[in-house]
Length: 186
Image 1: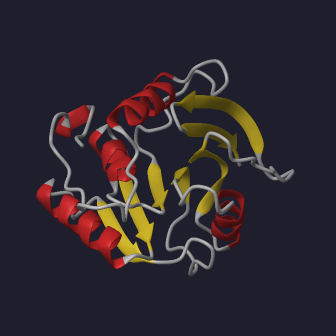
Image 2: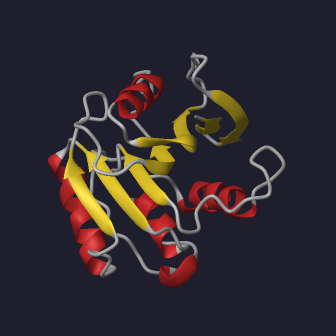
C-alpha cells in the first residue's frame, strides 16, 4: 500500500500482517481523491482537500488522512480504538515525518470525546456489516468534530444498506468491487 498522490506520492505505508485491518485499496483511494480534488458535479467545483481539517475515523493504517495531508490538507486527526491500528498510524505518521500535521488518538468513534477543532472533511471506514457509519457520524457531530457544511466520505460494504437521517444528504454513491463509497453533505 502506498500514497497515490501529492508530496508523498509513491511512499509506501506500513500495514500489519493478518486480517486485523482492512485498508482502503490504492485504487479506491485514488478514485476518491480524484473526486474530492476535482469537485465533480455532485460536489461542486471545489477542491475539498486543499487546506482542509481532516478527520479519519476508524483510521486503521491512517491511509486516508495521510493521503489528504500529502495532497495539501492543513491537518489530519486519526482516530481508532484498536492498538494495532494506532501503532500502525503512529508508525506511518513518523515514517512520513508528518508529526506536526497529523494527530493520532485512541478514541471510539461511537463515543468520542469533545473535539479540539472541528473538521471539514470526514473519512469513516468502519468494519463492514456492523452499521456503524451513521451512528458514528452522528456521535462525532454531537461532540463537535464536524463543521457546518462539511463533507463526509463513508466506505461500507457494497451490500450494506445505509439509513440516512435528515441531517445528511447523499451527494454521490460509487461502487468499487466489494466497497461502496458514499459522499454525504453534513
